[in-house]
Length: 153
Image (cartoon, rainbow, N blue to C red; front, side, top):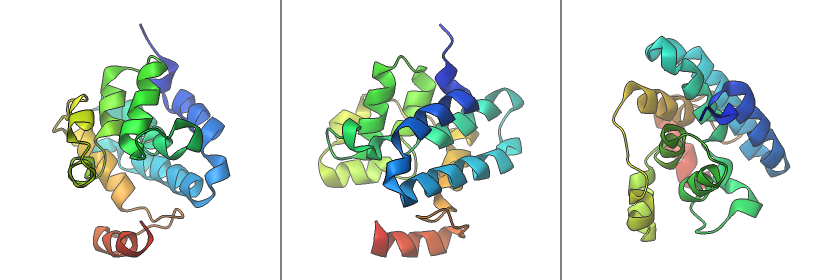
């Protein structure tokens, strides 16, 4: 069954319903979606909307009302499953930007393993969009983003 969540507009509407009160997290999310649109030519044409939708939803799990494990990739993925989101969108949100390593540190590898990780240009483009966007939406290169995250989370 098709879902509006895997379209940029549907995903943006869901993100906008949950993230604006989070201030910088909302700015970051908007900028990641814009960056994903900019780099969408790196993925097959039929996957470009899914890339942008995943960018809108990648940090959904930060919304306080979705907090369960305290690990936003899992909390966001669980919410998306509950909404009937397409499997691939759920898996992209669950596995963005090194989630597997942080899940291991938090003792949540079993929970994350419920969502199969894909190795694809689509996941790579999502990670690039996220990891070159600062905590308040600034445009960063990858190395600078990692340094900022060490200090700001």
